[in-house]
Picture (tube, helix red, strand yellow):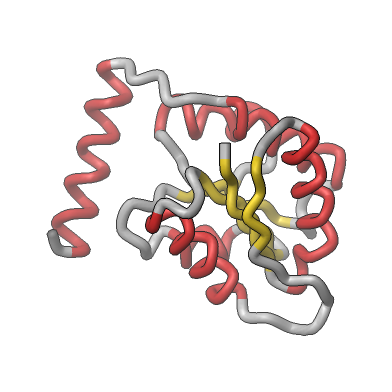
Amino acid sequence: MKIAVGADHAGYLLRREVIEALRQEGHEVLDLGVDCPDPVDYPDSARAVAEAVVSGAAERGIIICGSGAGVSVAANKFRGIRAAAAHDVYTAHQSVEHDDVNVLCLGARVVGTRLALDVVRAWASASFTGEERHSRRLGKVMQIEREQMGR
């Protein structure tokens, strides 16, 4: 799978570890930076990854900031993006299996590297189940998106 990965200054070190782990798992990575601790506004990182996913340049995306919250808020402003902050393995895989989440948001100041890599692996290996109840609920989410963001 091709996965876009981006981070702000708080997530730049974890970004490197995530990219390496994804490549080791056989994924193609679209590296959208950043590479230093100089301050970067998290909405810019979220935009880069969300646009890569929406455009089809990547199938999914991962965005890393300090808490995972800011990039999740920003990414969810894009039509077609279903971003979730996940800091445990269960939430990571269930967010894909039940909610078809296509952007994982991580907080580099919330989780350690080992746990973050376990979360990334669980999320990247998960697939939407397509079960009726999950499809029905996702349809309702998409209806809200159409109503609120325009067709």
